[in-house]
Length: 276
Image 1 (cartoon, rainbow, N blue to C red):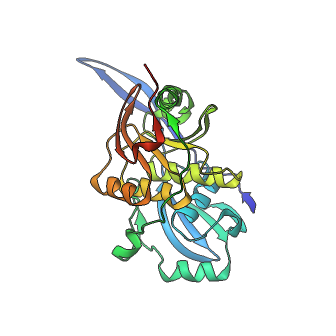
Image 2 (cartoon, rainbow, N blue to C red):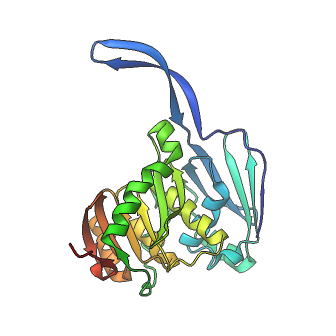
């Protein structure tokens, strides 16, 4: 897969003057504000969707989105990715097999996807509610390993440390800790970026697990299951639909994962509790 990116003039954050108040005391300071930009995803010259995302790691985002949306079956089907700066946003142009492009065009998501929504633009309930095939046995994770990753994660959130406004999705391998982190103003975008980064380097999705700094909504479970990731931990709560999809697809779903505390909502057999 060839990847070509023009030098983007769109930063991932900007510095802005603000008035900071602490009780009745205030002063003028500068603050770092996370940016979001409209990202047009285009396959073989045909527009598919416009998503609002942090303009960072866009090649990873495009590939991950293509995989989790079912537009391509593997990363090798994406022949090239090119990123172009436009006046009002960014275009990501991809080349994929003609048959895949036709299928994508037939179900094209022509509405803009808002930052917080992973299903915007789906034309039918069937498109929105895709049920991936069940994942395999996959990885097993000890509770102590999960706790260590949760502690490590804040050190990898570089953009959030500056802005306080972005989510992170982390990939960890038992015994090796965090291997990759991607950030975005949208939780599902961060996960797509992570999945794309892993696919680009040929990672085995069965060998690790994902931790996200957000709630575990339906599309987060769907995206993991669609590429064979069998273990998802979120620092906030899951939704009921997310739990049901996790049960159906065999994904181990954990919520309220904070320090040594967590709640297992589906398929607990992959989480190994350490002996006291």
